[in-house]
Length: 105
Image (cartoon, rainbow, N blue to C red; front, top):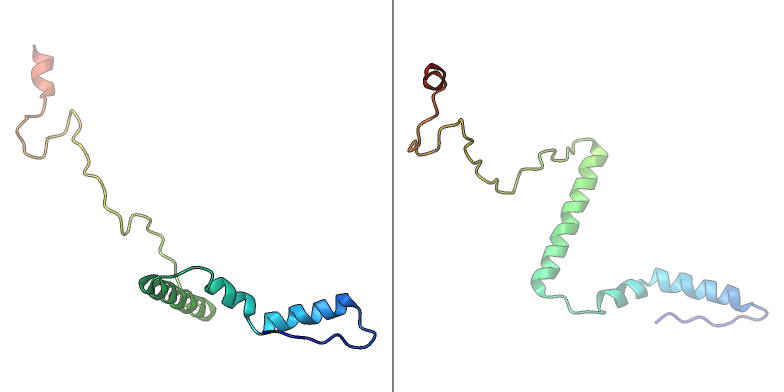
């Protein structure tokens, strides 16, 4: 618990400034925020791993070796493309329309 004593002739503003600095140094606000809601053990682990990844990326970026992934399609499934009217279907059950027979008729 952060505690300060008001000194002789000290203004309230100065005492409040000292108190805020002491609270910040002792990480009281950070601790209160951390314990303000329950975090499941799996969520704690994931948050810890995310922070470790962030630190390692920052370290690599400082050393000049980090390259972000520029391929947005990595990690998500693509939909199969439907065959158009002039393309053969996947199972070849429907033949392609012939342009020569239509011109000769």
